[in-house]
Each structure stands twice: as structure tokens, then as C-alpha cells.
Image 1 (cartoon, rainbow, N blue to C red):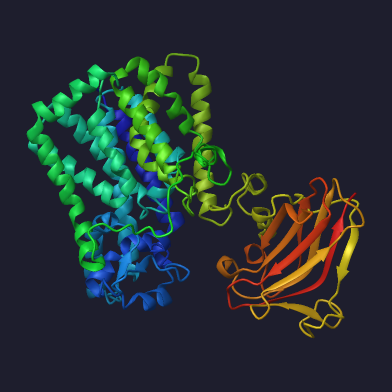
Image 2: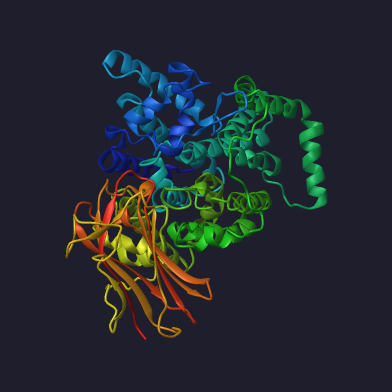
Length: 593
């Protein structure tokens, strides 16, 4: 079989990903690789080799010098006084080869041998990119066994450049998802090899891989469904009995080896918990939990905050591909659909359903090797139909959209944590935005033009008569109101002359902001709330440091669309946790009939 097309498409896709990281990212130059969650995954290595892993004596200095997070420590103190790291250690094992190279580079290259200097940042970034790209080659190798070359090549192109895999193979490669993409690709390939010819070597490798992926991200224990249901003809009682007989009676020696290796891969984590925490099993995700009532499912799929199919719409074709997969490759369908549905339900039940920052629903990326089967089945099935004139142009559009929005996400034009439709519509297709546009991230009611005709003044305060004001700086007059942690909350309550049934309310002030721009952790907030009989009807809240230019007086406003029966308007200005302070002047509340 000719495999030239998929080979060159895979090579070209990998080249584009490398160019994205080489020319656009370069996070390793300013120590932005080992940050936030990545810092938590990675901390095992510098703590073990350069520190006391139980007490983390160097942690405070590392945070001060490299600022991997905003003073958030990815660990908690146990009853015995030792630190337990929040994240399990699977990623640390995956980082280890590149950590070792970086150690030698730092030692003989004159860099600080502390785990976070330039060599470590660079090696971890590029090492994880290598993992991610290897996953594309592995899954191509498997797909080519069952689908024609051109369909496989296009499937690789779609996953590589039209999904958020691109972001996590380049800009955010040290996150879990690119390496997990590789491991899942290997699990699928080795499983297929095992079912073709059971052998101890494949059983050992498969057990270690499944154990490693579970130790990397505990919810990935669902990977066991792959070898259990691989190419099972149906989920009927007879088929399941035949599969259990095949595995646990006819090949029980291989299953015992697989099980032993699975446990062996997880043993380092258990030993760590026992030695440091005093217990063999510790729930280290303190304060985090699942909510299995399905409340987050729609948001995870379709919300503009982090909807998977909003920011990776091309995967709609992978879901639709389960139909041709069932028709043409029926043995793949039962196990894959069960795995996909169960996995999606579980990972979308996490209370922090948007999974923090990063482009799109990153938790789905490790499912892409499996979803490439229905995707490739769909691509293969439409080659000789008129549907190709609809599907292929749509895929090309998705490819452009993903590459452009990935660029936006890395160049300050995108909001990767708190996106909403208002802000998304404002920045769609733009290569440059105004800082003032970012008010739409918080104030979703805001009128895009900023102009509301017919506004009338209901309340005005220039703070000239207030007792707790300062004499400078001021915007006008002689006094302004200081916003600082000395007086954390300033509240202004206004009763309109009659109940408001429709229209708009705007709270507006002149604001002089200090502190670092984008310092969201300590940002002051400006809230407008509408009530009826002390019950909140609607509110909007701005985080000032999200969009204000520090050191300059600016007009700041927040808008609320009036719900029915509003009888109280509340404005609340709250000082953030940061050490910086601000001043406000000329506060007004305006409304329309």
C-alpha cells in the first residue's frame, strides 16, 4: 500500500508545529515554561534532586526569583508536617530525561543548577513537543492498517492543525495533554499488536503504559477500556463473555503480567505518599471534586467560556464519524463509543469544568487518538460523495480558525479562562485589540459602542464633602476617594424614584489605577447590582486591572440591562488583595427609562 501522502502530510504538520513554537512562542527565554500547573507537575524533580522533597526549603526562593505562579503553592502540609505535592508524579517521570540533559547543560554551561533556569525551561518545552509530535507518527502507523493513506493523512492534518492539539504541542507542550496524546497512541498501537499476536513483551509495555497514564492523571484509568473492548463485535452478553474468556482464561498469563506492570508503574506514587505523608493513598487534590449530576456537560461542549465544540468545531466531524465507523468498521464502534461517552461524562463532571487557562477544552486532547478512528472513517466515506464539497471546505475553515485563534491566545488578543460571547464577538478575526475591549470579559451587558442614548443622571458624588477622602491625586476639584486595603469596601446605595421595568443602568467614575497591569489576583473591582426587595436580580462586576492603564486617569463604567421590578441600585467598589491602591473621582449612576 502506498503510504507517501500520509507520510508527507504528517511531516508537514510537524514542521508547522515546530515553526509555531520556534517563531511565535519562545516562552523558555523569559522563564514562562515551568509555570502554574506545569510547575506543580515538575516540582518533584528539583525538590528531589536539589531540595528536601518533604520540606521544600527552596520553594519560597524559587517562587520569588522565577514567579512560576502568583504565590500559589502546588502542595499542602500533612498532619506530620511534611509537604505533599498536589499532582501525581507521572509527568515528572516523562520530564526526567530532559531534566537530566538540562542538568548537565546548566552545570557545564554556567547557568544556575536549580531546576528552573534557562536550560531546564528550554529542554522541558522542546522535549514535550517531541513527545507530542511522536504521537502523530504513532497513531498514523496504526490508522494506516485500517484506512486508505489519503484519509489517514487528512485526519492527521485535521488533528494536528485544526484542533487545540496545536496549542498543546507547541506553546503549552509541557502540559499533560501532548505527552498523554503520545501515550494513548502507543496504548492503541500496542493493544492492536497484542490482539494480533499475544506476547509477554506487549503485555509488559501495555501494563506500564496504562499505569503511567493513570499515574499522570488519575481519571485516565479509563484507558483500561481500550485493551478490554478493543475490536469487540458488540456489547451483548455473548460478546462480553467471549472477550472475558479470551483475556482471563485463554491468556491469563499475559493478563497477570499486564496487571503486575500496571501496579509497578503506580508504585513510586504509593511509596512517595507512604514515606512523606504516612499513608499509602492520599487524596492530594485538596478542595477539588467531581459533580456527577451532569450540570457542566452543556457548558463544556458549547459555552463560549470553554466549550469544546465552540473552540474546536472540527471535532463535530469526529463525532459524526461514529456513523460511518459503525457501518464500515463495526468492530471498532462498541468499545470506542463507550470509552468516548464515559470519558466525556467523567472529565466534564469536574467542578472546575473549564480547567483553568489554556486554549479550548484541553482535557479532551488525549481522546484525539481514539477519535481519529471515526474522523478517518468519515473522511474516507465522503471521498466519492457530494458531501466532500461541504465537509472539506468546512475543515479548511476550521483549520484557519484554529491556527489564527491559537495565535491570538498567545499574543494577548484572546481570553483563555473567562471568555464570553460579547468579548469573543468583539475580537473575532482581529490581530490587535484595545485594552478597553477587555471590559467585555467581565461586563457582558456592556454596549459595544459604549454609547447608550438618553442616559439621565440619578446620582452623582464628586467626594468633595466626604470625610474619608484624600486631597491628591484628583481628577477634578480638591478631593478623591482612595481605594485600598485600609478600607476594603465602599458601598453606594441608591433608590430610584419609582420601580424600573426596562432600560439600562450605568455606574461611571474616573479611576486612577496603580500596580502592575493585568495583576488580576489583586485587582480592585467595580460592581453594579440591581435588586428588588433586597433580592439580587442582576449584577455585573469589572476587574479594573484587566483593562485599565495604570498611572492614568480613565473613565470606567459598568452597564446592566434592567430586569423587571428593580427598586434598588447598589454600587460596590472593593479593594483587591494586592498591595497597590487606586483613586476614584466623580462617581455617577445613570439610567434610561
